Image (cartoon, rainbow, N blue to C red; front, side, top):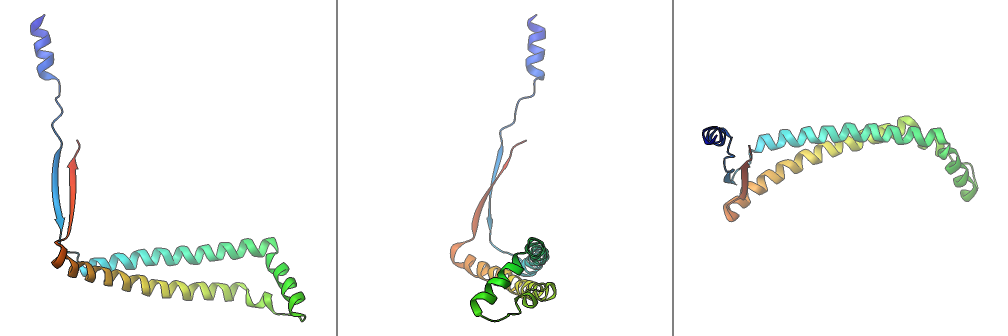
Length: 135
């Protein structure tokens, strides 16, 4: 019986120790960062426009705009054009303008961050990142 036990013990898979690698991030590609920040900004712009449309739809269907218009006309003492200010075309136009400005600013910020990181690496030496193989 010791032969069988010896064979089973020798064929059992022993777990190899996990390998650890420590790498230093010393360069970020400028154009890759600009492209990635543009992609993220585009996603945020689309999400912002859709969210603004959904919020406007909910507020319009609940009658919040008419109640706010009535409150403004009572406080101001005259009939106000609040409903024309918060029309769908005005709100969506504002949302698109804000989304486009956000797109430009986010893309520019990605470029600035890449440049600043590449400059700061010369002083700090970069980020030390550790990786582990856990198979």
